[in-house]
Amino acid sequence: MLAVACAHAGAQNINDAAAEAAKTLMEAQETGTPAPKPQYWNRSLLAKLDFGQTSLTNWVAGGYNTVTLASYVDANANYKRDKLSWTNRLQMDYGFIYSADKPIIQGNKDRFYFESKLGYVAARNLNYTASFNLKTQFANNYKYGTPSSEMLETMSPHEAWKKSRELKAGSFAPAYIDLGLGVDWVPGNWLTVNMAPLTGGLVIVNIPGLRSTYGMELKDEYRETAEEIRPEFYRPVRFELGAQLKADIKVNINETFKYSTQLVLFSDYLDKPQNMRVNWDNMITWQLAKYIAFTLTTNMIYDDKVHIADEGGVLRRRLQFKEYVGFGFSYSFSSAK
Image 1 (cartoon, rainbow, N blue to C red):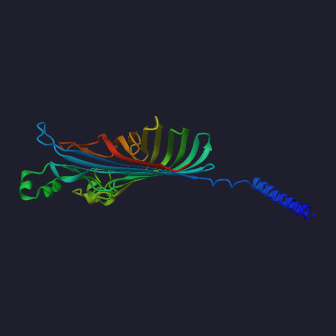
Image 2 (image 1 turned 135 degrees about the vertical axis):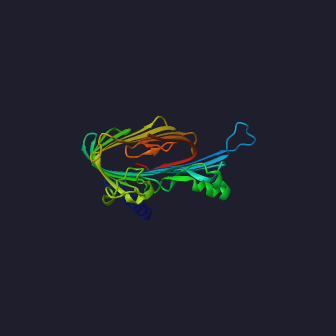
Image 3 (image 1 turned 90 degrees about the vertical axis):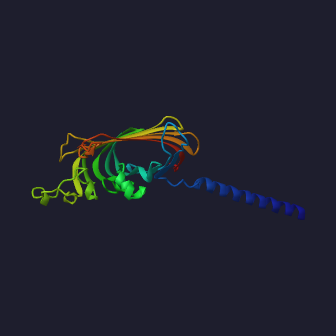
């Protein structure tokens, strides 16, 4: 009898444990695992560092030893929730070149560009937008002329080359700031066209000696009375009100080959609206290895208000074009969507 009672008690305990386990399993199934927290932000970063060097020894064809160093950063932070979106992009270029024929380090790349856009879905492929753009440089940039023999005799080579240079641009000299209201047309992930018929802009030139080059106006008190025009007589800021069209294309040919381009057209309602300001940037990236990439970039600018001198000193409107080919270290990061 004792054995039967013990067996009965053991069986009852097993049944109770099984029932408790089944109850716990059913509660877990009803509750379910917590849903993952929504990710509204998507961030990405591309950083590049290119190095180049040329060394010549008894080279009959001529030339000079050179060293180049260039850096590039492209950072993006984008927010999207329901019908609201906010995109931010920062691009920074900075580089140097040293040539043995000039005992001075020269800048060959200098660009700071930030754009931010707030969007709200209006219809399929169309968004209402408010955009902000800022474009300028980090430091002073110069054009170097050849020092005279007198300068080379009376000064050190370094000082002679510094004295013969001509300032062409600097930090916020110029700087272009735009705030526009318009719409985005987004037919696919590869193309975005922004049309902003109401765009207010500021052109800032905080270095007096450069203000006439970038089309700044004379101050009111000097327009009629000044016998000699001095750099400080020009206004440091010019206001613009016009329309802006911006087209962005990003195409990934394959996992290693990418192409991106941006075309920006601006027409100033207040001053010769038929003469548009044009900015066109292109970049081709070929990822050769995990951290090694080949890059080709071009930048083209046409500004009706900017006058550029040729070798003879004649000032007139000219097309500006820059090309850069780089090969070096590349690192990219992108957060999960």
